Image (cartoon, rainbow, N blue to C red):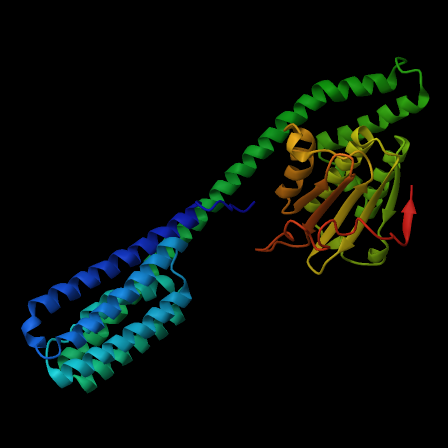
Length: 410
């Protein structure tokens, strides 16, 4: 399970690093303001030019700080843009102070700015490259244009490297710790779910399963068909409780066919369409967790049609996109108002919750008197962009209209 909350540990780490960049940038602006203010007499005759450069730095710093705080992170592209601007200011201040005189204040500001490059750039090679470019900009501005003494230039140039490298190392460690914390929380959540399932399995075994097996063996049920159905369901429940249902279920198509046959036994004619997947290896690309989630969700959907839709037929359709398997269950029954459905195990847990836990998405399109269209999208593999959005790969109510060629009616 992946922690997806916007305020997980990784997200908080990124926000902390973004605030660090902003605070350092504010410190740099304060330093420039103090230095230029104390040396205002050195800028007589060209104070407006220096003020314009300082204003440009302040505006760029305000823009960078705003986007970082709103996004709660420092993106690499922003760090690269800031690097280019900082080099430009190193050269611009060198040109102005060389021509008109005055203190070269761009260097100390660039040292503070360099911390952002170590934080925003994730790869060490990128940080080293950025530091080299920044150093080259200073050597051109401070060394070539401003003609500072060579010993000062050498010491100042070297100073950039510990700043960027330490910032990169610290931010990398913080990100790693945030990721590990999220992973630990995910494992704890998974363990808690497993313990809850174990508790439920014990309850089912000790009460429901025992009762069903007793009914299946005894003479309390006179109808042979009903008795056989109870025995079948008891066998399935035992395999579920003992954790052997996935291995005994056969391939995915067989399990869907069994669901359709079971629904037919309850009086629901299911048109099972999988023509586009005949001979395809896509079904085998799903792992056991995703397969089990699909089978369980579809079984619950067909049960809901039998119990609530007041219709004698439904369509079960399998299709695929390059990255996902799409399963739809369509009926032309009475439909319902999703807003008025009570929270419980049926729709929310047995369908939505089960599918979401396996990484898939569920879309339900229904209204009173308009039938029900249920679409499950299950990714074939883990992806940062799982699911297909609200309307699924076929568009709104996609797949509900049109013919279902090559279908098997059960």
